[in-house]
Length: 145
Image (cartoon, rainbow, N blue to C red; front, side, top):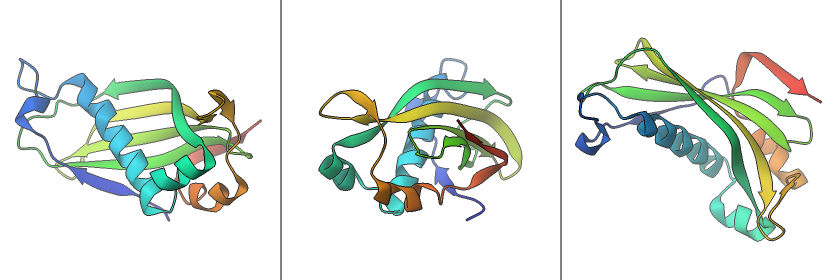
């Protein structure tokens, strides 16, 4: 798969007093697209509950490039930019595109998996690898040690 993107809608409540998108909405869109991808590719909340494991964010950053206003059309693209071979740690990049061509923001997150019973970072089960590895990779994707 070379690209994964989702359309999202701007709600009136997503706007700030300057009538452009509130900063926290960008992060919400990133989470929505990440979890949509996982769910659509078999890494469902039910499967994660069964294995007592879930994704956790260690760092999240947004670089804002162009304002987004009510009425703009928005797509969010998802890429894997770094990953340990055991999938225990990873970095994902999201590009937020408005009106089909304008890069409006880039989100970067560093994540890991957490054992939801032990409340400690963990390596996901082996059967997660196939689906997780189908996340489209950035042009400069790298495996990390």
